[in-house]
Length: 419
Image 1 (cartoon, rainbow, N blue to C red):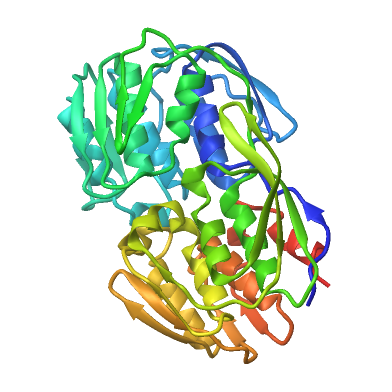
Image 2: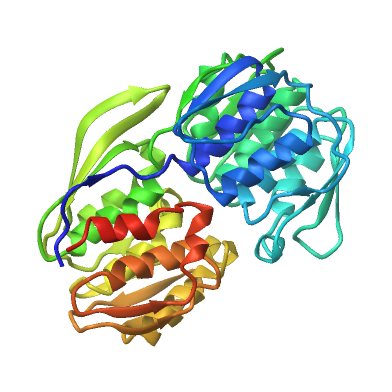
């Protein structure tokens, strides 16, 4: 199988969520172009609409949001349904904590199993109240009100927890300081700065200075690096050719997977690099080379956490052993991704071993065949979809539609660039 051509992956999911939230909280009109139109992002749009924000039908072509200001949201008459989107639930918790009304937050069965108290704890330290009806997950009630500033030391690196604290401080007009054990993606900080908010970063400490308002700002959403990584991996494992993925966000907190693929041996080049709205953007050109197993340092795991299922599939085609540790967070994603990846690799004939906080994969050039159980997880489906596209492999993915939460056109793009 060879790869050929160029493609543009959908808009970055993390930036898309934040663009909608900040447009709703800004004062004035913001235009958003290139937004990811997926189930997860639609969940954020739906929650904001339920709170009275003027979010029109979302489209990649562009649309305008007339923001009501930091205190313009109103109590919802019904539940705030976050669907399968942990980003929606956690980031909106920060907003809701700073508004003086109660909000009942729900999600689908998968999201309801994911931990939410990690974001509730710092917000409760600021003065909000959270009530849970079933342990650590959704549904939950957020009782917002007047908040005080906080200095918070996060035990686990989490951009979502950090962002929730920053948004709570923004809406409540109080100072917040977040200490992280390792750097996490910084889109919230960059986007707040672009809208006139004083956000300072030093080492692993992020500080927000109170702001009386949030300026409106237009956003051109770059391509999602997590989505692009699947096609860089495809090119790395292909029998020949090269592939260009255009207009990708190459924020240093998001490019860990590309660096890991280079360590495997893949050819990865950045072309037409530029800065767009505070985010670095480039065309990524990838091509195959002999791949060898790697050991991924736990310190870099936060920068590639979403791409680890894909890297496990690359490891199945690389010479030698690949070892990943420090990735316990994978167990509380849309599925237990450690267990799901290892079981599926074994089911198709690969040599894989589950660790408490990661996995070991020993690569081979043998054909892989069998059925893949995705557990409704888009990252599992796409990772094994890429592996299944290689010559000699024959994988039966049980749920193709689950990719719609992040990349609705994935299967058609995959077919278009392979031959």
